[in-house]
Image (cartoon, rainbow, N blue to C red; front, side):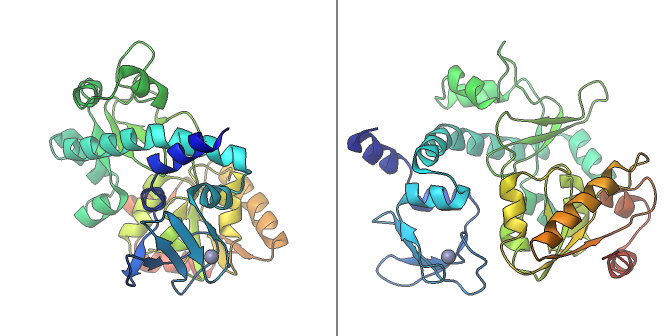
Length: 323
Ligand SMILES: [Zn+2]
């Protein structure tokens, strides 16, 4: 790949935009157009990550690493140069589209009573939570029209997975949550498959930028579980989108000294508990403290809170968690 193509790629993706797309929150401007915030590359508790938006450069005083957007992608995703360039290319094509789709679906949520009713039924009520998780609703049959009207070619919508091969909206009658670089859709109608993701990686841990600041974190497997705990006041919650953590999610959990409370579903077949035991032993090998929370049989954190439990009772479950 020649130098000019690399320069073009870097121009297409301003470093600040890429950081914000990965949930980086600047703490404050510190003069000369520079911004300071927590470092996404190490377990940072005092802002030490400096960004020069005009020069598209960063430097961290904590882990003493710095460079351009490609260097950042290498370090952040822990991949080599070529892989980082490929990830950036992919991101520059898909990110703006996903951003538009998220905004569109968020507007649709309040226009569809059945979607709001469904959220209520699952215990999601507060506008703060809906905002925090950027929850939306995909009615179906309208996203393609909206995005093509905005000038996005149909081929790009297909490539991102938002539109099917035959040209229909991929998400129809689904509550949608946008984890980093993907879309999780939960069906409303019983006839469709319950869960849907875009092709590609499920990304890192959901809500990690916030959860990592706590010495004790609660790990759950689903976004509705995350919602239930967040709503109950447990803001040290994070979600792995399934019980199998990918390599990046595992590294994230291990990026500092902490206790992890594994709160997977108490399935009838014991698969959630099995997965928790396995993960707990891996975490302990990496020097973390891991504890397994036992929910009543047949419950997941979402049903626990929507059907019976409250924050005080859940706190007791945390204290009783097996180590
Ligand atoms: Zn750092």
